[in-house]
Image: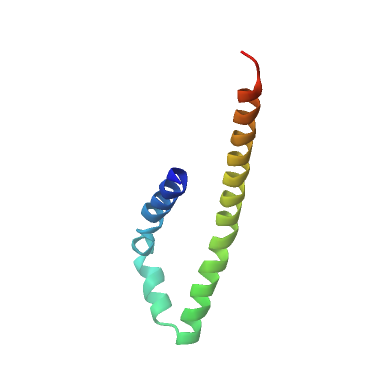
Length: 79
């Protein structure tokens, strides 16, 4: 449970400043588009964000599984 809360906290702090990372030129040109255009830009940003998050999540799951199996094997070895 501690690990999940730590990951959630890290994600919260990592994703919190996202709106401040946009450049003013991109913001003004996106604001000048129609409502449909703004919706398309928002969907495009979400679509571009999905693959890196999926790869990171998959890698984290694999790392956690490997660590658990390695720890289980080491605990079964005689000392």
